[in-house]
Amino acid sequence: MKSLEIHTVESSRVSQTDFDNLEFGRVFSDHMFEMEYRDGEWQNPKIIPYGPISFTPALNVFHYGQAVFEGMKAYFVDEETIHLFRPRDHHNRLNFSCRRICIPETGYDQFIQALETLLRLDARWVPEKKGRSLYVRPVIFASEEYLAAKASRFYRFYIITSPVGAYYSEGFNPVSLTTSGKYVRAVRGGTGEVKTAGNYAASFLPAQKAQEEGFTQVLWLDAVEGRYVEEVGTMNIFFKIDDKLVTPKLSGSVLNGITRRSVIELANHEGIPIEERRISIDEVMEAGREDRLEEVFGSGTAAVISPVDRIHHEGEVIDIGQGTIGPIAKKMFDTITGIQYGELDDPFGWTHPVKVKSPEESLS
Ligand code: COI
Image (cartoon, rainbow, N blue to C red):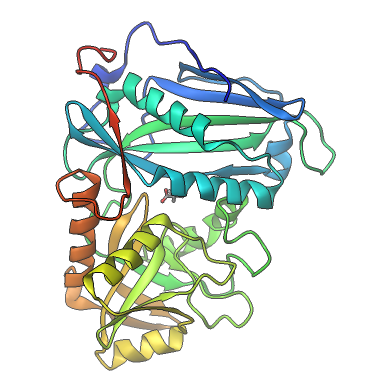
């Protein structure tokens, strides 16, 4: 592991930050991690003040989108402890994405050292109130100035952090979904199961159309038959039908969500019957018509657990739970967030505690 250089800010911006009005991903903490790949190895890991980076428009990533990222969160537990949620799983997924997009993998020791150092320096940016957290965004992109459409020889790895509240303006209130119509998100063998920039760019037009029609997000169906439910694009999806939780199985085009995995592990632990299998939109709509669709909720790092109260598909709308939050969604939300904030025991070993010095010793 290369040694980490640290350059701190002269004065923190934290006191100018309005923690009561946090729009997701708008405000960034004082420091960021930077590392570069050249001559066949990752090198020069640094913590530096958050700020602009300078490149020419010829950068490979701007043209061909060779970029991967992660979304993870850090939670305030007490004045001396911050919890990172499942950092090893996030790092494994980052490397999985790297392999698919032809980006060199990074080592876990360097990753966790960077995260712990960032969190210690920017401990005061971790919001204290429940419902808020510090969103951690690692991103790796091709940084060669070269227009040939091939994998770059150079890369940059950044980790930036951002204090956030709820992802959706609805908060922990139900959101509504509409199926994807003529658009598809991903096909098996493509890049749907990795966290790469292009997946999100391709989803913006359908997401805009969904919002114009009054829905929060798109419910993506499989690209081959347009029949099987896949995911929501910013979260995975769960249905409670006839007393059983069902979530689409990982088909090669669905993102392997870390919160999805947490919900499945928790359901198994609590004895809640759960199935990972193909589920068609017809099965969902029929269960909705027959009042057997008891709950629907999404799961994701940014969204945590997000109840769904309306699904639109081909002109038909089903309402779920009359705008209320279902008991399983609530149980999942309360337990996962309870573990994240250190209020509940963590029998799964999901949390990675980071000990910070007293707030006075971190930057003010
Ligand atoms: C996350 O849940 O962390 C994501 O990366 C989804 C998003 C694009 C905000």
